[in-house]
Length: 131
Image (cartoon, rainbow, N blue to C red; front, side, top):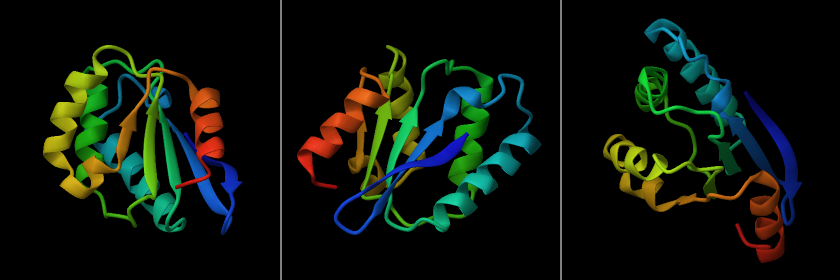
């Protein structure tokens, strides 16, 4: 569900891809909590990363909210340089308004929503050469 897909210069900054479409649609609260703790540990090991979250295939249902709540309660990691949410369907804007209520303003200001896919966003990140 999470992996380092690239390292950006300068400083070999890791780009972490998270595929939230792989969260099981029938996930239990216990399983969501365990997955959120794994994500927290993974991200804590990669301070100052660029995060790309792929939401293709994600539905705004119980599984999504269980995982979002579990993440909001998991141990916090170092704030990424930037977070890009890609493949955003129409419901993402409504969901984002709710997610903003459970994260800090600093975290929220650090996020960009994109309707385009991973490849297009990665090209833009590389071209900008800024984190």
